[in-house]
Structures are given as structure tokens and as C-alpha cells.
Image 1: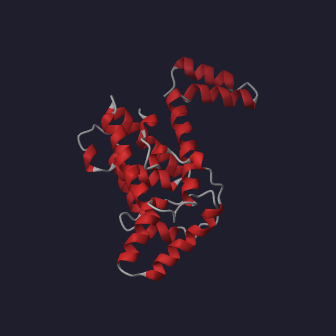
Image 2: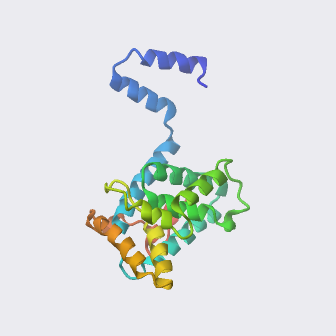
Image 3: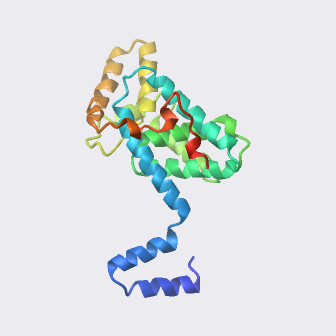
Length: 214
């Protein structure tokens, strides 16, 4: 709830032009922390788009697995693990809302890892992660793959992590039709703009993820 001074300032802003009002509201409720999440979210989205075009490249699945380990490493080696955990949880939720399912899913899997059991987490963490896992159909990811059969816009970015696990499972049980179905769904995303500079160290086998230490 706003303080008396806050309400007075807000009411004063209501008398200003719309552009001034928008700036005022942003300053009142938008913090440096929000800016940090937003900047990272934009970087992650560009990275996710570029990853879609690299799905069939060598060691792709290994890169996906390494991304989970790197997120865990950042949190566990942070001077403030609880703060780092909260940052990645907020990032996962924002990525999910903005339809960057690659970022959302990787962070969801990492944040639910038992290695982080001793870290004090926000109350919403367990329910949020459980909801996301259910939506994605973890660990088989059938739900996520079949969801993209209905998607008709490149704005919605698939979790190539999920597709990678789905394809591996189907190959193991010799379900070639299912494998072909999943690969066909990803074809359109291969035509998105690919810039190697957009791939975050999170996914590069030869680099570390230390630049995102919280």
C-alpha cells in the first residue's frame, strides 16, 4: 500500500500528460533490481532464439546439460545464495510470461534441483516450479512439444532443452515418427536471426557463467 506521500505524488502525476505519468509510475515502482532482471531477460531471449537454429549441431544436448550445472554453480558460489536464487526465480517467471520457454525451463529445472535444498527460498518457489514443470510435462516433455504444434508465431520461443530431452527419449524407444514430428516443429525456428554473439556463456562448453554472478 502506498504511503500518504506516495498517494499524493501519484495523484499529482494523474494531472500530467500521459508520457509524464508513465515515467512517474515507472520511477515509483521500478527499481535497479527490476532493471537488472529486464536486461538479463532480453539477453536470454536473444540467446534462446539463436539456440533454436543450432538444435542439430554437435554436442547440443551436452550444452543443455551444462547450462543446468552452471546455474547451480552460480547460486552455490554466490556470497548471497538466497539473493541469487531469488534473482533466477524472478528471471524464470518473467521468461515464462514473455514466452521465452527455453530460459524459463532451464532455470526451472536448475532451481528445483536437490543440490539447492539447504538454501532459503521464497515462499512462492515450490508452487511456481511445480506449476511450470507440470505445464512443460517434465521430464518427458510431451506436453511442451505437442503444445508447439498449435503455435503460429515466432514470438513464442520453444524450450530446445525440452525438445532435446524429448527427442532422446523417443530415439531410445525407437519412436521415429515422434522424433520426426518434433524436428519438424523446430524447422521454422531455424530461420530466426542467428548471431553467435547472442549465445550466452551459459551454453558454451568452453566458457564459464561467472559474468552473471549475483
